[in-house]
Every structure is written in C-alpha cells, then in structure tokens.
Amino acid sequence: MLKLAVFDLDGTLKQIPDPYIYLHQHLGTLPAAEAFTARGLSGEIDYEEWLRLDAGLWRGTPRSVIERLLRENPYVPGARETVAALKARDVRVAIISSGLLLHAKMVATELGIGPVFGNEIFFDGNSADPVVSGRVRAHFAMHEKGLVIERLQAQLDVSPAACLAVGDTTTDIPLFERAAVGVAVNPSKPEVAAAADITLPGLDLRPLLDRLHQHAPHLWP
Image 1 (cartoon, rainbow, N blue to C red):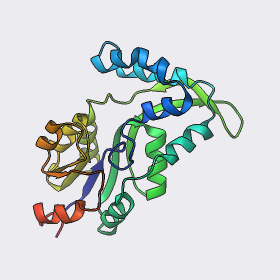
Image 2 (image 1 turned 135 degrees about the vertical axis):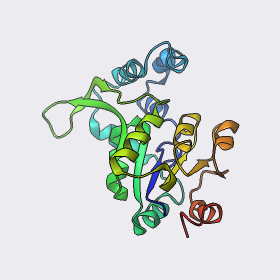
Image 3 (image 1 turned 45 degrees about the horizontal axis):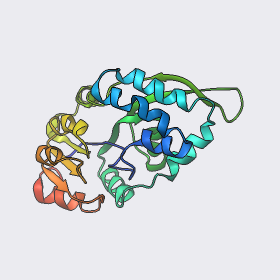
Image 4 (image 1 turned 180 degrees about the horizontal axis):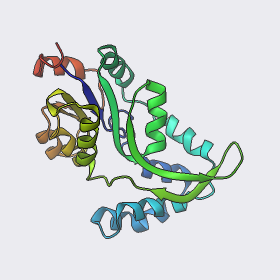
C-alpha cells in the first residue's frame, strides 16, 4: 500500500511554475534578475549564490508582502482534494521544492501536511512585519531532489516501492526514479513525461488518483 506521497510545489501543487520569476515580476525586480539568471541556469554560479542574488533584490521588502504574493499564487485544480484523499488513507504527504521553504510551510499549514523541504530567505526586524534581509540558506540545489527523497524515505522507514512522486520539470525526474510511481503534471519537457509512469497533460490534479488506481491498484485500491 502507498505510504508516502512526495510532491513538488511550484507548477505541481501551485499553478505558477517559477516562484522566483513570479516574485520578481510583482516586486519590479525582474530586469535586474535577468542579469544573473543565465549564470545560475548554466551553473556558473552555485545555487546558494543565485538565491542570494535573488534575495538581495528583495532586501527591505516586508514579509507580509512576500507571503501575500505567495498566497495569491493559486492551487492547481484538485490539489486540495487530492491531498485530503491521501491523508484520509493515512498516506504521509511531503513537499520537496527547490523554491522557497517559506512557501512550502505556508502550503503545509493550509493543507495539514509535512514534512516539507525548500530553500530559505531570512528576515530582519523586531516588528510584527520583518523585512527581507538578503541572507539565505540553500539546503539543496534544484538538481539534488533525489538526495532529499532518499533521506526522507530513510527517516520515515518507507521504501521506494511504497512511494508516489509528483512533479513537472526535469528536476523532478530524480524523484520519479526513487518512487514506485512517478507522475508528471503538465510536464515542461518531453523527457519529463518519458521518465514518468503517469502523465497528466494539463495543470490539473483531479485525475491523479483514478489514474493511480488504474496503473497500480496494489498501491491505491
């Protein structure tokens, strides 16, 4: 039986596929961010430095503004219902996101799930609404999700054979490789669909559990 379901966050549970671009667009910092985005994508700068450059552009922005923008990023249709159905069968639901841990924790609180993994930006100030400090901590790079799910499976004593992984980009392929069933949601590239056992062609999680039952009834009877 299924014991653990691991979801990517951005473009999988939430509709916006790139939280960094999304925040830059709304905070007016996208032109400045474009100056170093290619360096991050190419690996010229490491992931923590890339995150530091992003957060540096947001320095002084109140936490309430960041949280409001993240909250306005809508859930994918069926996200809440799918998570609720998994929880109802005592399946542990986790998030592994190379996006912001702040966002993952907000979703975890709203949906009643955990554990969650992501990367951190820090806030300064003694008021009720601290501001982005520019300090960051990258717990893992976007291509290192495989290491995270392996640690999680070991901590929870759950084998890959009892695990479901759901994502949308090439960075989620390592999750698929370490789960009994990998699900590509509105896959960003053909190789993502090719690596998955189930493909949901649209940005919609409502078919997921029926497709899981069809593909692996031993996991989801």
